[in-house]
Amino acid sequence: MFLAFAINSLVVILVVALHYEYLHQASLYLPRIPLPPRFRIVAGVIGALVAHAIEIWIFAGAYYLTVTHLDWGGLDGLGSGKLMDYVYYSFTVYTTLGFGDIVPRGMIRYLSGIESLTGLVLITWTASFLYLEMRKYWDDEGQP
Image 1 (spheres, rainbow, N blue to C red):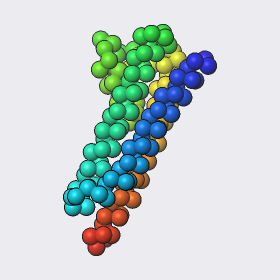
Image 2: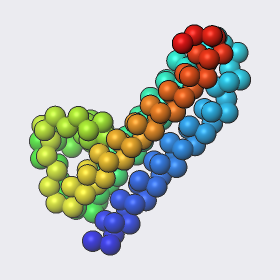
Image 3: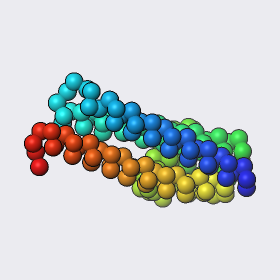
Image 4: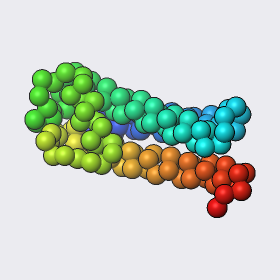
């Protein structure tokens, strides 16, 4: 159980640190991009999508390793069990979409739960950041 807690914590720390770094760098470099303000926001959104996708892949890698090498349980309905199946599952969990076509069993359920919580927090953090950036640029352009 301690190993599960440690690995889950490590994955969460890694994705939160990555997301923080993306938002920090975006706040520094978005104002410097030689584009009209509205296109800077588009660049910020694209960057955020890339950051989220990388974070989802990190969780998918954790699922893959813990299921295939640590025997933490499995994902019923996963299909072939290839890495891309784990990525699909991770996308549905991170976004809290949860189609229900894949069901976790065993200790992997804890990683699924923490990924949902982490995804929710990071997506709302991104939304807040982008809102603040949009306000800056809208104020600069004299728009409401």
